[in-house]
Length: 379
Ligand SMILES: *Cc1c(COP(=O)(O)O)cnc(C)c1O
Image 1 (cartoon, rainbow, N blue to C red):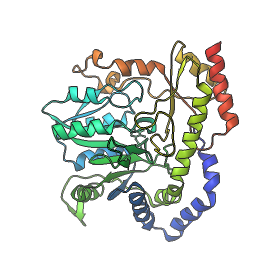
Image 2: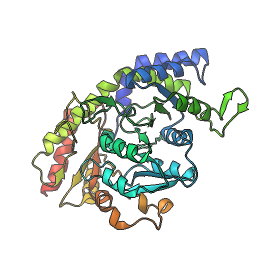
Image 3: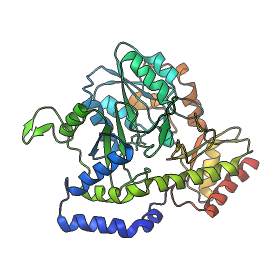
Image 4: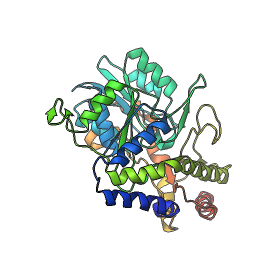
């Protein structure tokens, strides 16, 4: 699904030198590379504060802790996403409220959000799923109307741009009150282990969070709030600082691969290629509206699981993200949920399939993959 080794070979010397430097200075924790990466990412995203932490799941949890959400507060998020999003809501004893998504973009449905709001609702967590921003115009409008926080889960969307209705453009992760991301190796900006970060433009919130990630300390050995230990290692920061200048090129390589997939599948009636919403009807570098963390198709009239099996027998990796709606997962089932409210997710889990997507895909690989899928459809 990914080719981390191929990508590493292209930047081997830079990355090796950076890691070597950390080893020479032994500044393993909170060394200068962490600060340098933080500043570089702040400039890239044009966001005021980046607070690095240990992984993307921590980043979400810490964002919710920083906002001071309390037991019983309701947090609305998408039914069709990776479990980390709902997991931290539940861990903090907040009440997760899962809602349905849009059938074309796979992102949280603003109409479903508004329907789920109660007096206890405190926050919305849109996930920029597979690398495309959720409908932030509508989400921010709802948040303002009901006085809710917007926490963007940008683990899959780093480097993507969102174009507002009024034409204004901003990077995802800089659209709501606070955002989280992950530097897990396979993410669009991945390190060589675990890593994550929180973004915000709010000075007070940033200050609160810098304490939370460090055991609730604002002054050495004075613990003002209950915190956690969540740090980005210096070695990972060094890797990320070396890779950040390549992020746009990497995301373009993903878009180029997606375009080739789309072209190959044009006119195949069993295959529905990813939909780009809003400003562009096609994949375009100028608006950079999709960074294809995953290239996810929907299939119609063929058996998805049989296609998965067929690809596996041909040695083509593929994935089903995600095979089970979160509201049906054992850990998150709840009597409050009504199946009738999840028609889209319940359908998507049967239809989606993600093909290999990374920065090193060549034409020959794409031809082989697409031809194998098409042959299956025609068989
Ligand atoms: C990867 C991911 C996370 C979690 O990131 P980790 O660094 O693995 O903890 C959270 N949300 C989404 C949508 C993700 O894809």
